[in-house]
Length: 516
Image (tube, rainbow, N blue to C red; front, side):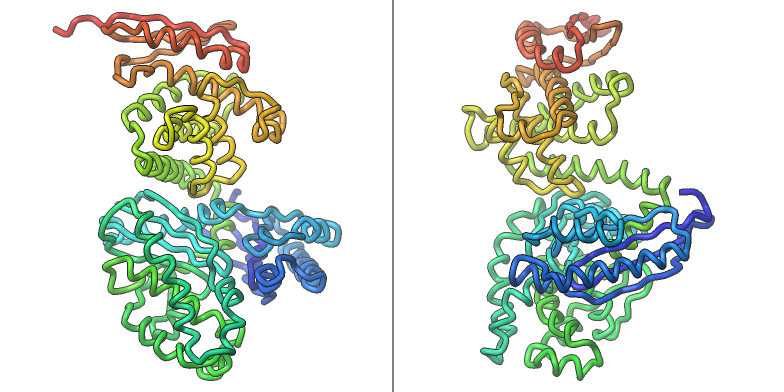
C-alpha cells in the first residue's frame, strides 16, 4: 500500500476483540487507534464447544462499532480474522454468518499454522536485530490464550515447529473446576504440564538450546510484575524473577492476585497457568532470561497490509524457513536427503519454464518444493505403497505458515508421485475444487518427471536444460553415465504430466565432454 493510505485489522481472539488502525508514511507505520474489547469467547468454546448466542450478538455489536471507527478514519483496507476460539467452535459457521449478516464484514478463520507463521515472521524480523540471538540456537514460543506454538531456531533460520492445543485460557478453563477443591492448584497445573516434558524435547532438531524467546498476550503484564517493563522490540526478563513471581502467585486465589496487583480478575486467572507454561519451556534451554517480544497478531497483519514491499521480502525469506522445516521433517524419518535435493532441483527447473505460460505462482513453487523434498518419507514406515504413508505423514505434520488446505495439496502431490492416476473417487482428491484438482495433477506431474530423472538415487545427471516449444517440453540431460533406467522411468511416468498440461514430454541425452 502506498504512503498516506490507512489500513486496519480486527482480530477476534479467545478472550478479546482487537482493532488496530494504522497509516503508512515514509515506509513507517503510525498507529492511529489501538482498541481492545474484552469478550471471552474462549470460555464458551473451551467449556461447551460452542459460542453462546449472547456472545455472538455481543461480537456483532463490537464489530459494528469497530467498523464505524474504520469509516471515520477512511480505512482503505480492512482485514478481519479469528483464531482458536472461533476455529474450534462447533457453531462457527453460524457465528460467521451472523457477523456477515449484521456487519457486512467477512471473517477469515486462520488455521493454527497460518496464525503461527504470521507471528513467527514478525518475531524473526525482531530477532534479526539482536546479535546474541542471531548467532545461537533458540526455542521460540507463541503462547496464545487458546494454543501454543513452539519453534526451534538456529542462526536466523527456523528448523522445526510444533503446534499444541494448549493456551493460557484453555488451560485455565480445562483445570478451573479443580481450583476450588484445593489450595495447591499450582501443583495440578505443574502435574498437567509435566506430560509435555518428554514430548517437546523429543521434537527438538538439536541438542542444547541457548535462548528462550516468547511472545503472548500476557507477556507485557508479566514483565511489569517482574519489574522489567516491556518496551518496543525485545526485552529481557530474568528467569529468577519469573520464579519469584510464580512462588508469590501459587498460594493466592485469582481475586487475591487481582487485588494485590490492581488487575482484572479475568487476567489474574490466567497468570498462573501462563507462568507455568513459560517456566516449563524455559527449562528446556540454558537461558537465564526470557527474551520477551511484544508482537501481536493484529500488529503483524497491519504491517502485511501497509508495508507490502517489506512483506514480500519477508515472505520470500520465510519460504526458506518452511523448506528447512520440511527438511527437518524428512530427517525425522531418515529420508534420502541427497535424492530429495536433486528432485527439488529438477522440479524447479521444469516449474520455472512452465510458471508464466500456465499461471503458476510462488506458492505453487513452494508446495512443489516441499513435496519434492519429502515425497519418499513414507519409506520409513513401509516400503510397500510408501507414497500412501508419505501422504499420511505429511498431512499430519506442522509446517509454519502452511494452511491445512495447502498441506493437503502438498500431501496429495506426494501421493501421486507414484503411478496412481488422480481420480475423483479418491476421498481426499475428490473433495477438492476443480481448480485444486488440476493444480495437484500439474504439480504431481512435474514431480513425477523430476523424480524419474534420479530414479537410481545415484546423481547420474549433472545438468538439466528445459525447452518449451509449441506443444512439447523437452528436457536435455547432461551425463556421461548410462541413464537407461532414468529414460524408462521418465517415459513410464510422463502420462500425468502430459494430460494435465497438454504437452508432450521428451528426454534427450547429451554426453558430457571428457574433462581436460
